[in-house]
Image (cartoon, rainbow, N blue to C red; front, side):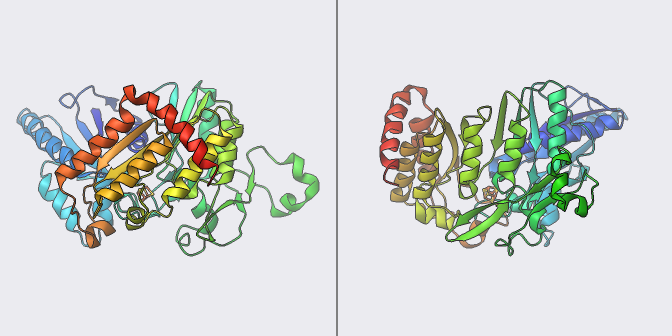
Amino acid sequence: MKFYIKTFGCQQNKADSERLAAAFKNRGMSAATDYASANYIVINTCMVRRSAEDRVYGLVQNLAKIKAAKKGKNQFYKIIVTGCMVGLAFRDKTGQYLQLIRRLMPGADEFMPIEEIGFDSQPVRQDQKHALVPISNGCNNFCTFCVVPFTRGREISRPYNDIIAECLDLKSRDYTSLMLLGQNVNSYGADLLLGKENVQVMRDLDKTYFDKSSVKISEEFINNQSNKNSLPRNFHRKKPIYVKHLGRYRIPTLFPFLLEEVARLSFAKVEFMSSNPWDFSNDLIDVVARNSNISRTIHLPLQSGDNAVLKRMNRWYSAEEYLTIIAQLKNKIPGVTFTTDIIVGFCGETNDEFQNTVKVAKLAGFEKVYVSMYSSRPMTAATKVLADDVPHAVKKERWQILEDLINKPHLSFRKSFINRELIHSSSTT
Ligand code: SF4
């Protein structure tokens, strides 16, 4: 029996597919090189944009033809759909989305939640030098345009020691670089500290993180100061970092500790993705600054450079705060560069609002931008209460403006000018 996995979407989906492949291999199956020679087809779906969803419908339709031909020859062929579309279908309590995908994918044999694949077996990694290491899954932020909190659910962090153990194992197998992955890596650990049900309400708690998962030692032993130096290396007792936002502490996070501990394992390069601007603490900036093997290219999604649009998006930072983080990083980390995500044509985005995004993009001097034209996603607040009222032609025009401004290499002279401008402006922020 052979399996074939088709992955749509982000790095997190790629990491999930590596664990999916492990689950099939553990059952004695081998990887096929194409759809036709496999017996099990697994489609790991993405919903971040409507176009990604449409591609899945098209693919299942085509695969259904292969299935029919195989059936004629009495050959086993099973189409399994998993990933974000299935995540949303199982979280939609009305059952409507599940009905919809069943109707649009009659050829699919099974809809499998990705959570069924755990972390118990060694992922089948696509790259033998660079590894993807998931540290959390899901998101609690509910940006109004984003379907992720519905496809992946609330944020759940992997145990700290499990992540370190995976990184140590990668080191022993000569991996030279890795990427720590999560929807919002900066908030890693809040649920470990507060319990996942309480993250939204218990942000101000002063707690200490104590990971007992791999260390069997009594509290009495730990509290005895004279035992301090004999504690095992993988023992973790951390006072979390709190990020203040609008005068109150947002959530406690363990990410700066985790990132530094991974960086100290001496990989040539450690990356992390994605970071949200409102959780990018000074402690995190310092960790990046003092560990030169942490990537000097930081992905920091802007989404919009206009404060009114950010508010409609439920993004809790202003354009000025965003630029302040960029300036702080530039001041502390020589040579740091930035990539970003921007949505154009979000509900009600006026030309003036878009021009504010262009202004911030110029000031930030991004190395690369992933621009997307807003498309309404099921279950999101934007779909429920805002109108998708920017014409497609206008979205396209705005998309092109940002592409030309940031992603065209011949404009690089502009970036050095922009960097000088930012250094000047940052002294006033
Ligand atoms: S932070 Fe916002 S954009 Fe990012 S995954 Fe969470 S809800 Fe989506």
